[in-house]
Amino acid sequence: MAATRVTIRFEKPSFMLPGSVLAVSLDAQQVFCGDFTLGFDTTLEVAPGAHQLTTQIQLGIVRKRAVQVSVEAGRHTVIILQYSRFWGNFTKKPKVFVE
Image (tube, rainbow, N blue to C red; front, side, top):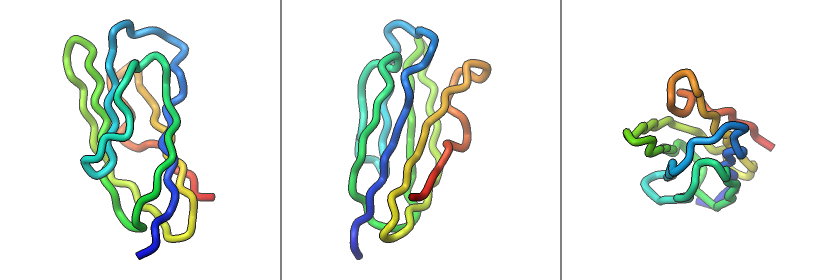
């Protein structure tokens, strides 16, 4: 099965959580590990179909979220992660755009 492009993006937040480490995985493959306050943007090739996207942020306590995302063959899927300050975690559904 042919691979298709996926971009996972977390825009630099407008607030600070000093010393917070963010780890993001797609199907158990780590795609980002670094400072939450910097944000990130990464593009990779994956097989079409359903994938599990996992976020983990260390805020003194660990907040983890796993969601399913679908990727269409021959299309570029952009996944935008959104952090909720109210819940202290990423939203249950990221924004997903198909180009």
